[in-house]
Amino acid sequence: MPAKKPTRTTNARRTGRTPAPHAAHIAALHERVCQILDIPTLADRNRDSLDFHSIGVATLREIIKIAFDAGAAAATGAPVATTNRDPDDILETLKITKIERQSAGGTGTWVTGTIGGFKFEALVFPEHAEVASYELSESRISKLFVRHLATRQIAANFDRGWDVQPTSERARVVVDLLAAGLAETVFGT
Image 1 (tube, rainbow, N blue to C red):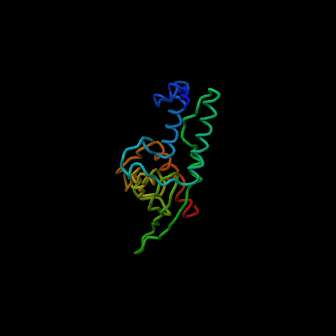
Image 2: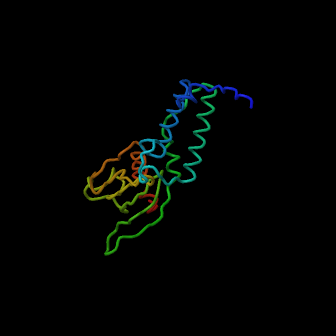
Image 3: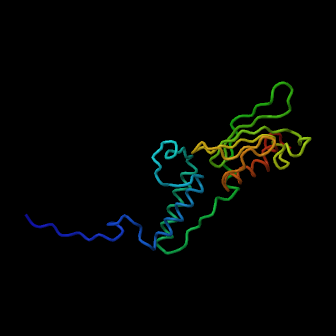
């Protein structure tokens, strides 16, 4: 039986490490995907609640495009962008799933929905609050609860004042978008 020829392996294959020229692209890709999913790491954490996430198909398409762009950038040596998605892109994901008028003569309306990978519940009023501090930034929202869909972690909570400030830049963008236009969307004014 003839002897096997020795095979050549690169340093990267032997050590499992990414070659230095591509390491920056991989790091940028990881950072960008973590930003989009609003998760702290892509590393396995050995807990189902931390390692499994529900991801919408639009988000999945975006991640695939980012991975493709990162591969093309690595091949040419071009830099990879690491910025968050544009707020207009996040706003396009707004889905209101339930609108429920307050009972017992209240004028507020409970609004439930999703936006940018978060679930939200908000108590919205047709008029501004008599006490300005009871309202989120002149938005006519007196209560806003935001939870990350993938991790189920609280991302922000406003109940006539901040109980939990937005926990990430992406959560801050979502809160700002809701404050800017949720009442107008619900009441048409």
